[in-house]
Length: 438
Image 1: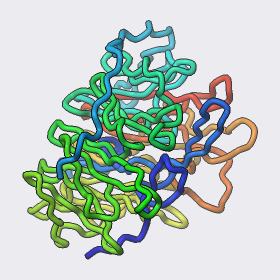
Image 2 (image 1 turned 45 degrees about the vertical axis):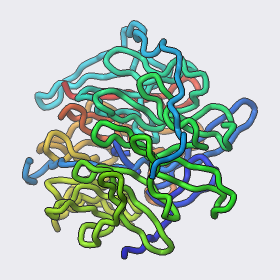
Image 3 (image 1 turned 30 degrees about the vertical axis):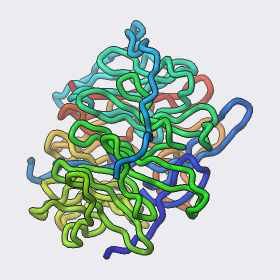
Image 4 (image 1 turned 180 degrees about the vertical axis):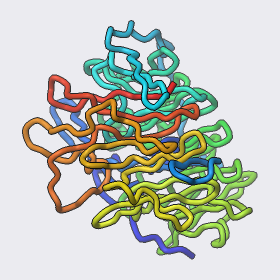
């Protein structure tokens, strides 16, 4: 039985523990610990939020890679006023700018808002083949999708941690702005006008499996270590009560699967017709999970890699090199010609690498380097720090004076998409927008 070498953190209990999530980056997915600051009323609380699990299906390649238990009445969906979504505000003159690189046309999204996307979590997703992204207008947070705003009327919305596609509609993991009566700050999933998981102390690790939401619900339990218990909730039922801890639900051949810990053993549990069983060790070679045919379908982030994805049934990993980081696929080193490889992402059946080259951050994709349209390096006002390192460990112990403008490269509708910092807001914080190929 595989042994687990880390401990996954609960982002809302104020305890920092290592582990993975993301993807993906997205859905997705998903935890290396990152920091986030939540201010509630007069109380300032520093929360260390794990990066979301990044699980990807078939994907990527820049260079010469081939293309190609029933719960009692738990977690009721709490209704929300049906005023959301509503028409988005009229875009400003800065909105929807386009530019061309190497024959590809790219469009900017979110310049009309105070901020778009998220510096720590990416803040965008592929929903029904179209772009959905987080945005902020003043102190108001919401998700933008197909020209409408979603969630802007939620009075307790303190943060949006992840967007995912559930049957072609956006769902998002929401962090409460106030103290939950169930303990802690709390979180829930907002979908189709409903708060999902509101009866739990908080929820995490959302996923969509066969058009149904799955997530981990946390229950306060003074008899358990840490005073809490975790369960996987899917289609109105709780799973995983027999284990010490559960996390990261994902789809395995169309069925629910999740990771579980029992003592020192770490395993994958599958659910078929409501019955739980442990996946054979032959299909779980940490961190890769394989289907019955031996193809990698999911990669668990246990903190040993900077980034990872799946391509043609095999894992692609960006190592945590002490000197330089590279991407590895099928025994091949990718990105050796660059100073650093920061991310890997499947885009339209090819692999995209976010790289550093002579002080610039660029996207190596389909034999070209994209991102020259933007200044790739910014100095932070005041105290200098590496903002990219806030998202994942990067040159730990070595002070960094600048941060890369481009990050969170991904696929939306088969098109290259990324987050880019285009300057600073009035309060000195970086301003992001989303860029997508048309």
